[in-house]
Image (cartoon, rainbow, N blue to C red; front, side, top):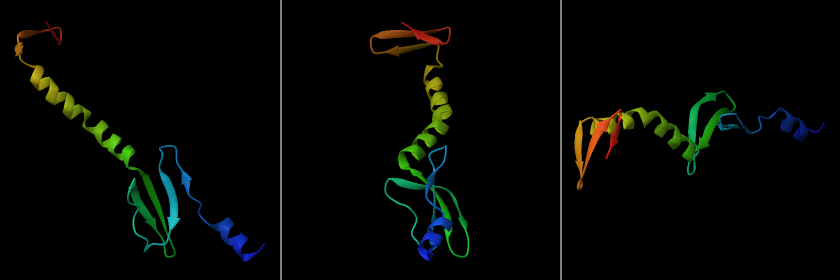
Length: 101
């Protein structure tokens, strides 16, 4: 086996995990990913290279929004907590957890 073939077979090839994280090896002094990719987890650092983890930015944004859903629901419930609320010319009355007109 040639030296180039041996280097290829012993290298860490980029792979995608089940949670859509890209795992790749790169020299430690290489800048972090940017643009439409973002660092997903902390790097595993070794003497010759780092193992890094990245995801598309839209996935990271979605995860942050999912974490904020309880906060958003609490805020919405605060607006709906009064027994009667005027909306324009309609009067909404809370019945059974929902506002009926």
